Length: 356
Image (tube, rainbow, N blue to C red; front, side, top):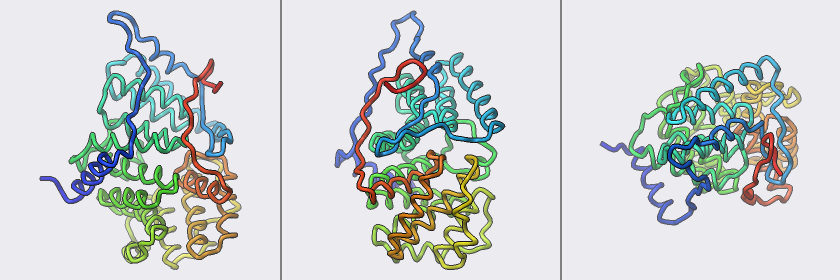
């Protein structure tokens, strides 16, 4: 039986389709002739690191993680690449390789590999999902919405379905379903375009797929600020009523709970984050950006515009540009600075994965 949660998601997807808000994703890749090797798969795997640009065209550089962490990520990426090249008929190989590209910031490489997978395995939710994540991280927000919408359609009615990619120890603890993740990232894609009406709907649907305190806390963090910006103050207040310091959560969820307690007035800024202690690694950035963005959001909600802008500047001055809270802060910052989001034009890559 279809639950009220999946019905809500289905109704949105149907309405979204009928309003023709989405364009179809198009691939120019042509399959190899029968009996001929598909050399484009190896070319995609051999591309060097390619990152992204901000909304106003600023280059995003390599993530400055410590060498020990980069070595771990690179080793796992190399393993995923080898498996991918040896298993071009296995859908999981494409999804795993694309996901591991993103961990190192190789956005366009991930887009290429995942697009190859979609050519081979159309209507696969995981491939569209991870290409959607790559689109958000690459600041190609409307294209990302297109992909995430297709991912949502592919898992329609499957409330608890998990993704096919390898999961980290922390991802296993959090135990998010694929629909939860799809609608979370779709919410961020809408928010980054300044579309808070659709963003708050997506965050709400994502929250409806929560099954534990970790997922509720993470969903509430995004829902609260989107509800307030969309004028749903009563719903935002209801969220904070559900939050308590003794919620049973994983360590990686602590920044979200602390931010909610800060919004609630139960935690001071000095106990939430040190804005001068900028992160030195991706794990540190995952926590710091969530906390720092909460300070920016509260300043905005309290009509402290100068403080709001200064905190946003502090966030976007850090180098970990692939974090969701960083992306949200960057979008806010650029809107204040007068940059209007425009979809990126497709750019052909040359040797080494660099832009022309």
